[in-house]
Length: 511
Image 1 (cartoon, rainbow, N blue to C red):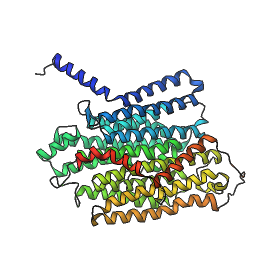
Image 2 (cartoon, rainbow, N blue to C red):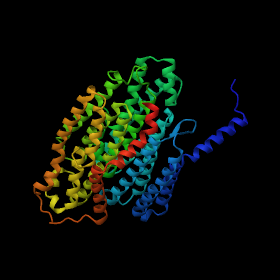
Image 3 (cartoon, rainbow, N blue to C red):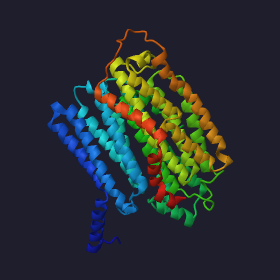
Image 4 (tube, helix red, strand yellow):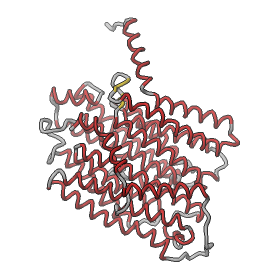
């Protein structure tokens, strides 16, 4: 017969929840910002364009202070072990909030959004909601919490993708995103149910302990893991879970495309690292996730196919957003190389690469926004002759694309160098992966450099003014991102140390 909990037990639960809430302040603050933005939109509807964007910028910037306070309480598990505060989670909280700030800046500069006469208030609300979900994904250590966080990100992303609802490609991309997202979520939930059936636990640390102590059926675990990987791989955008990317990236507003290509991918990678490093048994005694095992081979296949497919298909793209979409698929493959290494150096390289990718990819999309504002086009052929007429935009785009290729002296070069170094440090078994990464980077050189070629060496077929003005603030942000891309390509120690800090405790627990 079921017994009601005693008063003391209820009091203990309440005390635990109060204690957990104190450690949950960044998420509470962002949730409060979410509600404030809804109220601001309702009250100041006629003046909301600039007010909403500025309020969102200030609000997101304010969350850095609450995240900073968590440095003193790392290593805590809160809400009965469903959520963790550690260096790894803090790293990604900074990452996601900064991504949100850059997305808001791009949105402020984007004419395709600002020319809308209504409905822009909810846009900023959804960006904050998406940031909240991604922050939760980085800290979740329970299957239920992981599912809630992922769905929060997905629901906001579906709406943001179709925000230009009067454009056919936007609604088409949103519908495809929804369909693929529903299928991947269903697969992941079924994988979670199999994992729960094997262990009777939902906490990922307890799942690992139960699998190692009680044993498991390898086939069932493999099926469950593959289904879960399908759900996470959909977020990462790796082959074969990439089918949504090109149409969604092309149909979404450019700032949303930038957010999806960087922050959403990073959220999936954060979850992938935490889940498969903790929940899935690894090491010689487990028989999986070791060189030559099925799991390692599966991740290798995903990485190699993503690098090859993304770079090869990008060769035929004429739309800048579709080109960067296939580029994003290829970069998912490069990032997976660091995860395959399965040690602290590989994880550090992965996190460093994500930081470099944030700078160069947001920078490339910012230039795409500026050019789209002036030309009304996203076609690469319409970039002809813009290098002389928009000197800062042309120079910045060239720097960002060189960084995406992975050439010195940019931060992208250091990111790829760290990834390949981590691979080679594990011995000859990973040399072929490094070679594939280098060869596919050479392929990417062609389609990336086609853009500067058009901007500087080919003249426009349409008459253009000698100088195209783009505004002081967009130029300032563009210059900052370009200088940071070059600066951290030479003085990369701060980013490297930050990445190393993020894996210190996390690495010691896993490797």
